Amino acid sequence: MNEDAEPETPAVADRQQLALSGADPLRLKTRVAGLFLFLPLLARLRFDELVEQAGYAGSRMVPADAALLSLLTLKLLDKERRSHIDDFNFEGALGLFAGLNILPKKSFATDYSYRAGPEQQRRLLAGWVKRLAPVLMPGASAFALDFHPIPYRGDEAVLENHYIPGRGTAHASVQSFFAQEHDSRVLCYANANLTRDEQPGEVLRFVEFWHELTGHDPEWLYFDSKLTTYAELSRLNRRDVHFVTIRRRGARLVQAILRRPASDWTGAVIDIPKRRQKRVRYLEQPVRLCDYEGAVRQIAVTGLGREGPTLFLTNHFEAPPRELIMNYARRNRIEDGLGTSVDFFHLDCLSSEVRLNVDLDVALTVIAHGCYRWLAGRLKGLEKAKPKQLFRKFVETGGAIGVAEGRTLRVRFDRRSHNPILREAALDADCPPVPWLSGYRVEFHYR
Image (cartoon, rainbow, N blue to C red):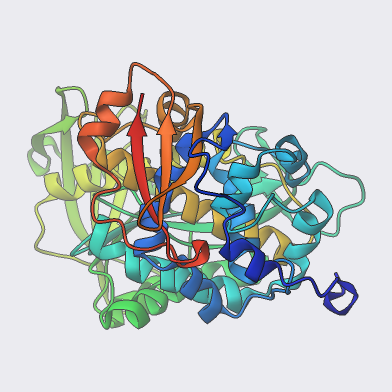
């Protein structure tokens, strides 16, 4: 998009007026008034500052923060494609959410991704995670890591082939990398600008990313066997980062373990979700690996539902095996989180075969995921609710937006059975002024 070709209309000044008058407090009606539930969080974290610090492009008609908020709106409202922004052409309330009179057209939403670079995505995620961490994941020290291939469905792609679990075969795709905080289940890192040669080193890049944010390395990392190489594990060990991963099982290796006498094995009871228990046996021993400096601890476990033993590798020699096994089992939460990103945030709806374009979409997925995790954590009894449930019960609620006295933006929700939960949560309590809405505060009211 050529910024010089755009009209010089001072839209920033226009949006300062909110396009509203105090005469009619119910002037803007919308089908998804629940979108404004995320405004208190975005205002507290100063999303506009994060966009400015990241260096995203903007114009007089559509400033950078409004552009990113417009794209984020589609993620929060369960829209597959940027072209679906046309569904909201006459939704003035949604334009107001982004600080505009209406949301931009699909041509702008599509072209904007090509104006963003990888460093801007990294700076945006770094700022977002640094400010979100004290709210949702204070004291974070353990993380689950995983790759996710985003399949390309066009013809003659120039992308590399990656194994697609859902298809059982390799296919042209964009490989993306995600990190999720272990306890809060918040996605806190993503990168879709990866080639095959760069993939093994992505674990260490995440460690450096976290070190820059907090001043220290992560304490624990959990990932599967295909995520990186033994040489990279050795580099993690030199940084005193504890890891738990799975060793690939060869036939000779499995046979040697199974020949060990029964007296060498130890029994244990593993707790799994829904108050079930599983009895396992484990055998631990130090082993040496190719390209890994020194010895690593191997724990062979039977009874986990596989025919052969599962081989855990860790560089922590003192943690109880039962604790290591249970913590690694919680790594499945990142697969659940990625499944949610595919199902609700439409992560697999590839926006382009250009990685940089996809990288912005992935970064927005991380931010939208954090918004929904914050909303779930504030609603009593719904802490584990998935975005689709929250969207259906709270976000997809009709309402009206108007201006009240004291520079207040009043969001009045239509009658709905779940409104008492929102009233109890008081999401708008102590809501700071919203910078991209002329410093107006947000208040929620319920019919």
